[in-house]
Image (cartoon, rainbow, N blue to C red; front, side):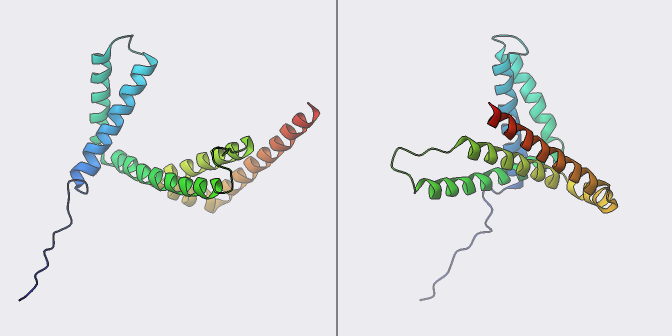
Length: 169
C-alpha cells in the first residue's frame, strides 16, 4: 500500500494578495476614519451616514494606490511584532512582582513611549523608502550628521534643564 501525501499550494483567503493588499487595508482605513469622524463629530452630530460615506471614499482612495497599501500592510506587521516583543517583556518583567501588584514607574513609561515613537518614525521612514533617500542625499554629505548632532545636543541640554527644575521644586 502506497501512502500519498496531499499537498496544497498554501494559498488561503488570508494569504491571497487581494485580501491582504486591498480588503484588509480598506477595512482598516474605513474603520479608523469612521471612528475618528464619529468621535470628533466634524461633519455634525448624528450624521453616521455622511461619516460612513466619507470613510468609504477615503478607504477606496487609499486602496487605489498600491504604495499606500504596501506601507499600511508593512506597518501592521511591524505593529504585531512590536506588540509581541512588548508582551514578552511585560511577562518577564511581571515575573518579579507579587500577584496583583504589577506596576511600572513613570520614568519607564516615558522612556518606553519615546522608544516606541522613535521605532515608529524609523519604521515609517524605512517602509516609505524615505530612509534610503535621506541616507543617500543627506547622511553621505555630512549635513545630516551635523543636524543629528545638533538635535542630540539640544535634547541633552533640555534633559539637564528639566532635571534641574525638578530638583529645585
